[in-house]
Amino acid sequence: MKQVYSILRVIGLVALAIVLAEISLENNDKNAFEVYPFLWLIIGMVLLIAIAIEISAGALHSVLYKSLTPEARAQFDLTENSKKEAKLEWWRKAYKNLLDKKPVENEGEIILDHDYDGIRELDNNLPPWWLYGFYATIIIAFAYMFNYHVFGGTSQKEEYLIEVAEAQEAVEKYKKNAKGLLTANTVELLTGESDIKAGNAIFTANCVACHKVDAGGGIGPNLVDSYWILGGGVKNVFNTITEGGRPGKGMVAWKTNLKPDEIAQVASYVLSLHGTTPADPKEPEGELYVDPDARVEEVEVDMKDSTSVEIKMGYDEK
Image (cartoon, rainbow, N blue to C red; front, side, top):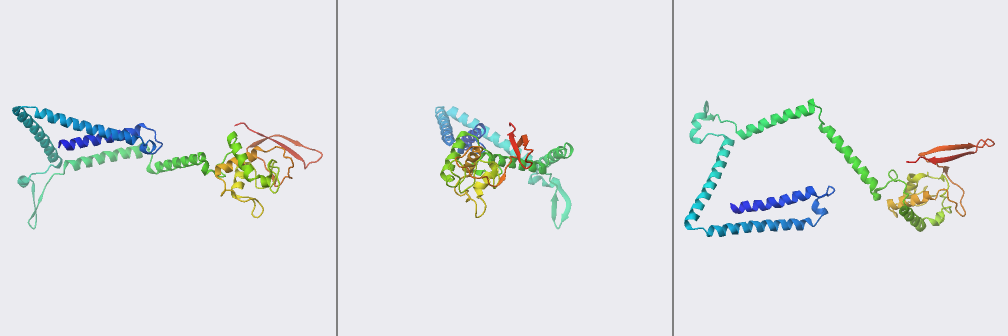
């Protein structure tokens, strides 16, 4: 029995160490032992220390027991046996109280008058453990009723919808921060120096053959003016680079050669060239693109030619 208790104490100590590691360490919804592999070493040390303590305690108990005189040893054994017997008796009484059944020799006291072909029925009491469980379910039912039907607690359906909304929000946040999952709907204009430099390198390696080094246009259109064949703005440019231009006329789709974050960088670089002056710019193609987030600051109309309208655009500071 002592060995069983020792094993249980060792297991309990190791389990406590594991629980404390999971609770106290930040692990970003992952197992702490995956994030911090060195914890296995610590748990191993805890296990060895616990085993050493149990062995040392057992050895000390053995030495002290052997050092007793025969009379003292007999008295010690008698005391220990009395303690064990008392514990066993307590468990026996608890077991009987939980069952509350009549001994076989006293069944005559609870036998009923019913007789079914010689079969008599006993009027046994319901086991207390069953009754306590039944009473507990009644209490829980009342608590549930008051919480959800009187005080307007969150129903299971509402909890489900809340969890779904939280999960969707988490997914969208992850997609927004994960560059590899960028789409035309989630991409944003990059203005950092490192992103612009990376976009310049990608443009130089892949785009200058058609658009020239200064993006003034060659086989492909001019990229520095305000006219766009498939729409301007970072989302449209990102989509055009990803999926390619017009069938049979435009450039190929670059989604197989460039990663989404690289496409975002080159699209942002192209837009950063807007308004620059190429050496030999190609004539504008497509339609004038007006950023829907821009505001009109000034409109100048040439009264001599009513078809000539100059629009100067500005951007709200955000």
